[in-house]
Image (tube, rainbow over all chains, first blue to last red; front, side, top):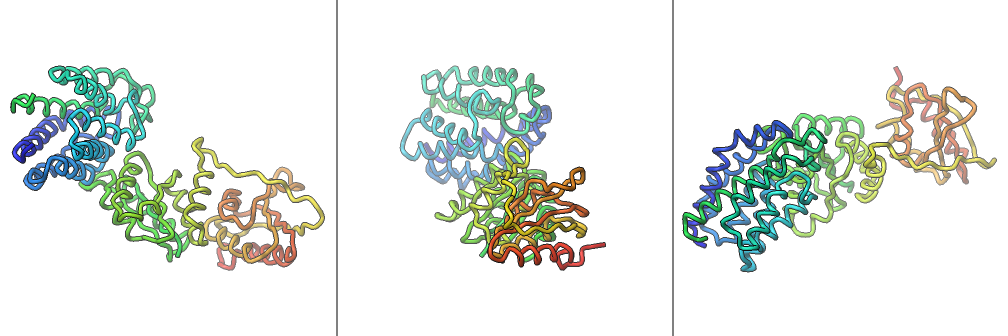
Length: 198
Length: 243
């Protein structure tokens, strides 16, 4: 994994979050506190500003640094959650494990940090099925798995975060965290395809 | 050294206001820091700022963090993990409403209470059902109890700073001392008493101005204790709070 690829990953992630920031914010206004897009954009802007330094690191260190940047810059709950995802992935990457195992360890960190699990209308409802597909080698299915996962969050009642205060009224809206995670899955999948890595 | 108190809110104004309340109600010599707002200046919390707030009030006895909601707790956890090795275990996030929790936590801290004691008391007081959980104690009943009834005239009642001064005075006596409010509708009978040496129990009685209380004590210096405490209440806790 070279610096150029890490640089391209950051640019792709930044671009999708930036392009969809308003949409994420609208989703969050429906059931959260309406700052998801703004917060994430601030974090990914910081990541982009720091891209040279991060791309100069080894892959596990770059993941960790990117995670820490999100933790420090995002501000909402999504900062510690996406940050923990990347820092968990960094741990497994440091042990030389494959992408599926990295994602698996990242997910464990998200569960621990958010004191949550699947079914609570959170980003985990997207990450877990994506991880299952990845681990099963269904690489081509990843974008579709992600799309379906977001749709499934629509019928769920939020159990964590501000949305949980709405109780049943949270049903009928896509989860913002799952939606932003979906964008990142698409961006990474597209980049891997373009680079002929998949 | 007393423990440090950190107040974390999504709003910088709430955090600063809660800190003001603590300093005015409990004393301005406490180690209390406050932080609020996200790294972009909006509503939210900032792990870097929380880390700085912990360091600002660092005490080897420990630091208690009071948070308002959701991400404030998560970002506080991140900040704790960023502390130097060995320090994180001495910092705890307390499960209590931020303003009330910080006031009670700081009050206990000012009396030298340990981090564990602060956590136990504040958590018990604000249990997850949202009810105030005061452990009921049996009423003193035998003749060896010295009793006296007084009326609270201080304008804030037996609360905040007066409550702290009262419990501090009670702690100077060896006697077992209890305080009970006397219900208006049943003046003949004192309500369930609370330990006069526990700030949390005393504040839990929520005794307001005008309330009649019975102070009861048993033990070697029981008479001196009752006389001193009753006099203290009648003199508005020696701080001229009566209007």
